[in-house]
Image (cartoon, rainbow, N blue to C red):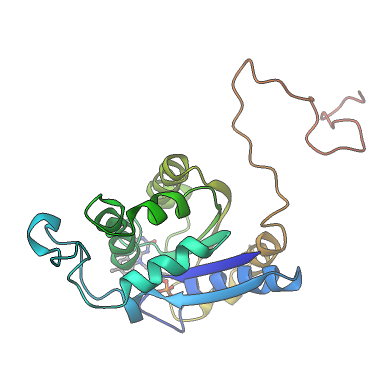
Length: 219
Ligand SMILES: Cc1cc2nc3c(=O)[nH]c(=O)nc-3n(C[C@H](O)[C@H](O)[C@H](O)COP(=O)(O)O)c2cc1C
């Protein structure tokens, strides 16, 4: 499988990129093909007004490599989105990457059908780093990623959050987010992603091969 990480921190020796790399290392250990792209190297300008700034052939007039990047994204089976927590949300680079999908999904863009088809149905892993540790700080990112996954029919396999501020400090987080990220990478295509309703037909056990564990009770 192809696993593509989009690292959205402008710091290439920073914390979120390190978590993204750990996910990729985990995926590599399972034999998957991996690639990491730093969005700051590619995405140079925000979405404009598509009505006025498209080229005559319908393509985006911002000439910064986004189109090629997007087609690399379409070819991936799994995406790893890495972001520092900025003002309780995702980084500007990641938001701009997402915003500009719009220009390429519109009917004016000559390859829009490829985009509409290719952007759907991926495994999605998210890694976030923040200076603050309290759980509420990253809730905005969690909600954003859940809605994004719902809209794009992605399987949101996991979100790893680490606490750190200075470059590379994430390796000293005693909650071991680097190990968590590596583990997520190994399980990227294995973990079940479920979203039950009351009437969902289901087995009653998640992991085959044993009775479910209920604290204080044998069942
Ligand atoms: C513009 C900016 C905004 C930030 N906003 C927050 C924030 O809202 N909450 C927080 O806990 N940390 C915040 N931080 C700290 C970063 O999330 C933290 O340093 C993170 O580890 C940086 O990741 P990186 O090393 O991948 O760039 C902010 C940092 C910057 C530069």
